[in-house]
Length: 316
Image (cartoon, rainbow, N blue to C red; front, side):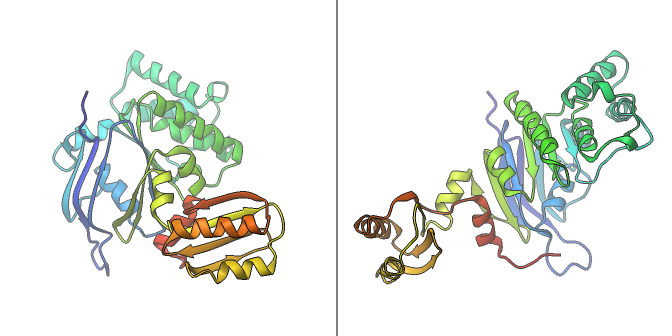
C-alpha cells in the first residue's frame, strides 16, 4: 500500500504584483490518498489561488507542490491528467447538449472512440441526465447545470477531484443529489478536495478539514477534533424549561467562569478551567432541578470554530 500523501505542499507562497500581502504565505499541507478534504476560508483567504496552483494554472512565487509525487510545475501534463476540476463558475457550452459537452471535454482530455463513448454514458448515468442528454444546456435549470458541471470533471476518471463551491445557488434537492454522488465517489476510493462556504456541508461530508486565512493554515483536523480543540473552554447547555434569573446569576458568579451568555432555555459559559467548571455547572443545575436537553464542552458546530478563527468582519 502506498502511504505517501496524494498532495504535498511545501513553503507555498504566492505574491501578486501590486499585492499588499501574500495570497499564500509559506503554506504547508499534506493530503492523504482517499481523503474527503475540506478547504475552508473566507473570501480572500487564498483558496482559489491554491487551487489554481494545484491545477497548474498559476505559477507560485516560491515553494513546491506535488501531486502523486509529481511536481506540478515540472510535470504539468501528468498532474493535469490526474486532476478533475469542478469550478464554481459553470464551465459549460450553453448551445451544446449535455452529450456534446461531455464529448468535447472528453476529447480535450485525450479520449476518443469507444472509450469516449463509454465515459460519456457513465457520466450521464452518474448525473442522471440520460433522458436529457440531447437537450441544449441553455434549457437546463441551475441544478441540472451543476450536475453536468460535476460529471465533466469526472470524464477522464481522475484520481483527484477538486470542487470549488459546487452547490452554490442551487435548490436543496440538487444539493443533496450532488452530496450523495460525491459520497459514492469517495467510498469508491476517489480523493476529493472540497471548498465551500456552507459549514454544514463540510461537517457532513469531509473527514479532514483545514481552515485557511491570509494564506496560512489556521487549523487542521477532523470535525470532532476542531470542535474539541478550538473554543474548548466553552460550556454549552440546552434546557427543557426556562432558566430562572437566580440560577443564571449563580452560574455567572462562579469563580471558574470568565464570561457567560444566557437565553431563555440555553446558555454558554467560558472558563479557563472548563473541566472543573463543567462539574460545578452540573451541580448547580441538579440542585435547581432544571431538566437538561444537553450539556457539552466545546464548540457546538464548525461555524462557531470558523468564526472564532477568522473573525466576523465582512470580507470583499
